[in-house]
Image 1 (cartoon, helix red, strand yellow):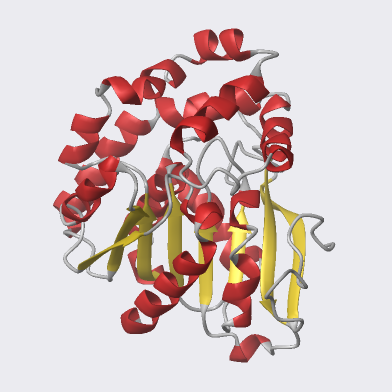
Image 2 (cartoon, rainbow, N blue to C red):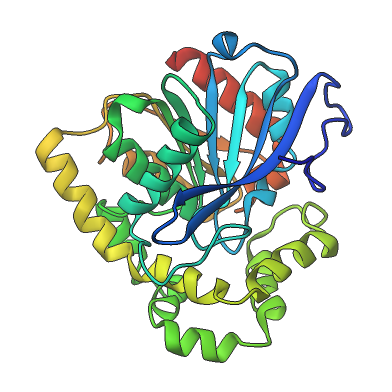
Length: 314
């Protein structure tokens, strides 16, 4: 593992005794699946004393870089922080298959427990598509989750997802679900295309800079990246079926669930009721002065919100 060029252990307001590293882990060599990740943790903390681990799952069109402003503060608060690029994104490989969230959750379970050697349950946090994956993880590995935080996404398996996916403003759900068309039309225009989402959904205009968009644009200009993104969307209805079956068979989630989002977003009012469809113990908390990109637009409030919620969940 090497020091991450994007996430510093000595950023403004950060604690100097935080170790930040990143690497790539073989998950399935036969299928050619490797997962890139960043790990932040209190420096010098013995393995047996690192009792709290949080798994941060980014959205789209993003990579684990989306968590750059919150990883070190969370580690300074005593957490081992794992931020992967899920299958198909960033530094992770981009196979043709396996983009249902059940399979993708398996990638992350192997990363955290078999590769990084984490012992004990996780606090799982998702944003955007990462929230959909976080739900799949919590449903598949119920005994491995101590709390679940979801932000800014309709969760497959809920009635709200069924309503939201057909709204005019959710046009990209259908667009991405046709990979040949989407990849062809965005080829060579990836930076312009992803910038449209940041321009439309950001409340704090300086939160995501041109340099930040450069990072995301390079990620989606990589061979196979746009197709992988489309495959993730194309599986969402399949994910909904899997999640409904899991809830029918095993019941709603019993771990504490935080339903969050940017308070300036009109859709945010729907998130608590949506999460109550899939979980028994739901807390709603919207992040002020933030649009869709919560951990980048108001990282300080996000960090305080998560630490308070997770402390009560444990």
